[in-house]
Length: 201
Image (cartoon, rainbow, N blue to C red):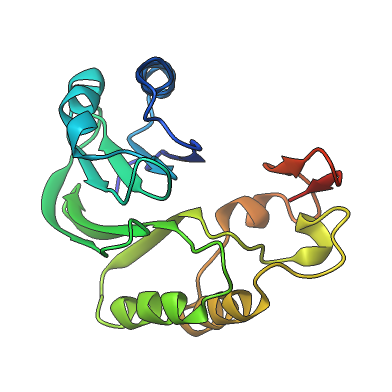
């Protein structure tokens, strides 16, 4: 594959509001990523036509309700892309997108992990992964962290420990690489914080 595939992934904490949806998508379009993956979209069917029109290119959705969950994948027109097939669940927790790019078969998992400790969810992801032979990319918000010593601040306990163990099992079995951590081995950066407790992760 010539060059790098540039993917942006973000938990948007709901884009049901018209103005927020427009602002978020226009901001993401300005980044010129090849693929944009969103989690916690809170979209329903009535929003999809307008969302597609704002983006202007290919996009795929797996919705749950206007109050929770939902994932989406937005494709830009700045790279070679050919859709093959898509898989979803009925809880708005994942999209698995199979596509062809520069004559290479790729499978993209866009995941919004359960807030509760539900290792069975990741077992189902593992089962799907076991049937795929081409290159796979995982993005999303798993609602857990891989390295508590580096990825937590002010936490007394590991969040969703059974789910974390299952994800670590998948990583080891399939030799997956955390691209960001590979480039920032000791760095501490957080994307979520709670004001009352001063917790970050």
